[in-house]
Length: 477
Image (cartoon, rainbow, N blue to C red; front, side):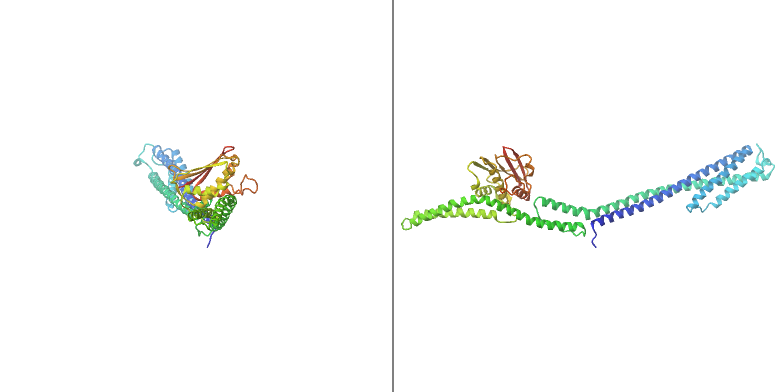
């Protein structure tokens, strides 16, 4: 079943929220238990202190036989019963009141024993008397009973407090383990969600991003198909359809620009063909006139000259056909100097006498290029430079290796009118032109830019009004 990207992201966040809610509820529950236990400890501590106060006044009574001490001890016992009821209420609420009946009975017996001791006050041993000297054995028995019950209560409370302290320590330890477990669970969940997002979101996005970068550089190869079953899959399909259309249109644009350049080249090629055809015609006429003459040497020379002119005309036509022929991107090892001179032959008829062309190219410079496309770039830049020098000037064409960069630079520099500062950033935009209507399509430099990026290179341009323009083409060697 195909799930959309939106549902995948919503599902991952719902799982995260669900797990987070469970962890929060458990945390809240454990915090509640710990809070109740601490509250219970506080209540029992208060109860313990109250009983200790009762025991203190009990001992004072046994020493001084002051009735007020026994009364205060009894008052603290009554208060202890209230404290005990508070503790019992908490324990019953949490379902923990299991072993408190004996303790409550002992507390009640201790209270009764104190009451009986107060009733017998003055009938037993007085201050300074020992138990053996006491006149009333009943009072002595009550004293012993009070002591035993008080000691029993004290020991029970001490043991209970120690037990509860140990329980709290264990709860804190468990709570620490719980926090560690929670952290581990959240880490695993975050890792799983991150992995899910990387596989289902980041990886398809990276594939599409890399493909778009290639498209921007002029590489119109199809994206690898992905089967995510969501919007990314349909996006890749749409991009591949767009790339197919771009491939078609780029070929159309390139061929259209070539045909536009062909119109410019026609006069130059006509000039190239006109001279050899005139020579051929003259040689044939002389041959016809000298047909009856016995001299073969002169006739042979005429025929050899005719053959040279035919070869010259054929080369001009061949160059023109190769330039206009539609072809795919096919890089090969090219001798750069030869490529420059072949290009200049094609446009020789378009270069006016008042424009001087200087060529400076290393004889051994070779590069892996598509010769037809680079030739198209050179023709465009050279003709632009020539057209910018209507009143004459110098056009410099150079090539040089770049040290420690693995690239070489092709430079076309003119001394023409230059490009204005506001138009300079726009010269590579499709259909942008400063020429008059009908004299330029505005696609030439845009196509050149695409061709150089297709080779993995870049174009840099600098210009100043009235001083000329320089194009530097940096291409991997």
